[in-house]
Amino acid sequence: MSGLFVKKGDTVLVVSGKDRGVKGRVIAANPESSRVLVEGANRVKKHTKVTSSARGSQQGGIITTEAPVHVSNVQVICPSCGKATRIGHRRSEEDEYGKTHSVRVCKRCNGDI
Image 1 (tube, rainbow, N blue to C red):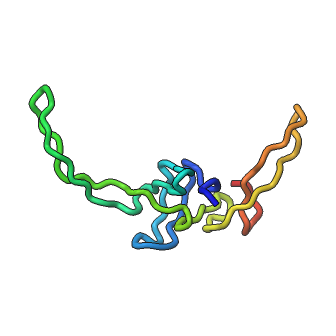
Image 2 (image 1 turned 180 degrees about the horizontal axis):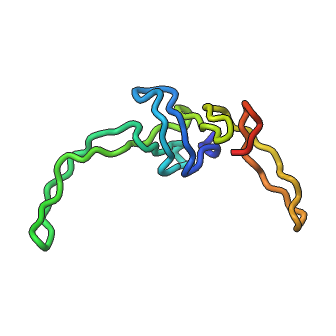
């Protein structure tokens, strides 16, 4: 399974790893590698080379950024019940054009996500 259930903008809970228990918003989702970037989780220090710009200011040093987390290590937090949950799918009712859409559903409370 790829990371189809977690989307950019979802609030997730990290359930395993060194940052277990951290809640954060998904900044980016990469379904090809099944990884997501969670705000405030899996922070790493990145050393960048000091360079000079045209004005003479220097940039570089040690920068703290987020690294990707595997999608199996996060769970989506349901907006209606407020708990970390698995995600199911159901088909929506037909709209005025007779089309149905897939809707993500909380497995705990059956509320829409």
